[in-house]
Length: 497
Image 1: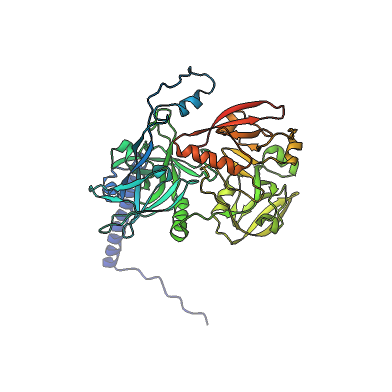
Image 2 (image 1 turned 60 degrees about the vertical axis):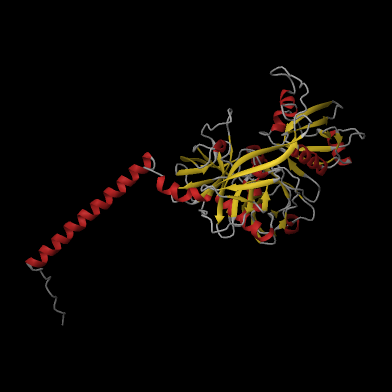
């Protein structure tokens, strides 16, 4: 017997009226919501209507960093003059500009910015170059309070990030980090800092680009912004519109010294990892893979039988290093590391450096066209305190990347390879970055650095120490004597920062 079907029930007139009213209210609400969303999208396209509420809330956590140090004053003697455009003009400008000559000691001061990340503990983030060489560091707050920095918890020249400690009498206003990986090109951002020592200046702009490499160091991965960044903004925060720190302002490109709309910030995701290591170790402990890498060009891809020019080419493997122990070989192409795609060579050193020491990671690579997966236990990169921001750190063979050059102690094998005389002693240039200052000064593979600052060098560490000595004197270039296979010797003034 078939079940009886109940007829569809028709609502009463009163129920129909209530339903109609509810539908009308819902329609109005939806229209209002759509209108609100449309208005919000339109407002965002034109820029934030006002950042005053956000700026007012965040400003107390941003500080002025003032430093003082003792330097040699000018002796008052006559300085040499070099015609505009003459050879070594940059060398003379740097080494003989006013204030560089020896003389009586005097106190000089400098200004920068910073921001509080822990108001109870008194922890302040800033740039290394803001506090470099300082005898005294003072944090100046918006309400007029001044607190002397008791301790530099940690500093990392390679990313230009430093963590300072003050002892507050009461909890300080603080800000928190956001995620920089979610920031998109075109997002609105706000910078607060102390340009030219003016204090508490707010500027607004957008994220112009991400993952910028400006050749300032091995781990360049900057956020670029057109928010006005000037001298004195260094070390200050770059906020998103929620008031979270997404970057630390650290550099500008400018022919005039003022903002032209090209500023750079260290991404918050990078800074957070460094700060945590400062708190735990007082230093940065970076991962080490133990390979030399090269860019996969179209020609190299063809030679290696690859379908596309992607990944990082292993040009050599350090003996006794983590990669060698795992079975990585020369001419392998690393395409994936610890779950992250490696699309360009320059991204891999940064990824490896951020990997915890001792962690076992999967490394996917192409070898003769075949994909393989190896397990590598990450070692610790050797860090030398005097190293400049351009240094990557030594591997087991004594090689080091410095000032855009891959360098190694000169031995009999390298003499034979580059046709150098047995009497030549120094540091061999193994590779030169095409966009570096070294390349612009026509330093080439096979050249040998025999002297730095009129002193002989036989190891890369010798050169690092000379650079550190020159840097502490306030100079930004080092004078090198370079010899080639023909026995020709020339002097080169090379910027190291």
